[in-house]
Image (cartoon, rainbow, N blue to C red):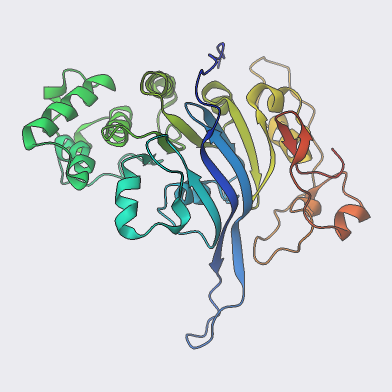
Length: 340
């Protein structure tokens, strides 16, 4: 996939969203109903990062590393165990989303939405496209019935479902995968949010329609001034869509920085391993594999040392005997590795 020149954003330098010590632990079933579990899966463990207004950040890593849980935490579909999520879209005082009550969350949902991986599973098959896209407007009490129909029609046109009247009263099963994902995008955007979490929104689509959906999302982000957290395991997609990339491994961000900086000069052994697995689009040419040890570490009560220690080809006794390294580096490219 070809890349394109990135446009610089002339936005306020203050962050739209900041995660501070964000943590989510899931208890492991003990097998005894009367005994409280003392073992936990560390799905997300002490994340610290920020996202600027109008910017996009890709969260990449293998399955089970905590990407989707992080996205759900940021829009409060999942409650954090610890940490803070500071949201400041410029319309009021900065708010810690992690502590909001159910009533206050309703107002926040107008400013933050999520696009899910499977557009069919995330829609009620018994509801028309009009009902599906208008649902956030009804929930927020926005507009009259006629206003909502007009708003849905305009949004369907904006996402490329034209003419809108041909789609309003159809059902999800009557649409193609690409059309359903465009409906999901329209539903997320209809309340004019400032922040969207997109959880692998093109992974369920045919290759032939992925690029069109990606271009649509990028175009809408620029036109509507939306910030994206783009969750993906595909580095080519992240390179196309995102200004910055954060690489995640077993609940920790191990490297974060400007997209081209991370992809051209990876510092963490895990990032290098991810890049070595990307096919080279030229017959007879391949990347030299990075020798990492086999077997993914178990995220249940992991030891305090570096999460990548058990698979790292350059780890030594210092890595074994010290806590997980902090994100450090120069400029905006940070890496959590004692040997980087």
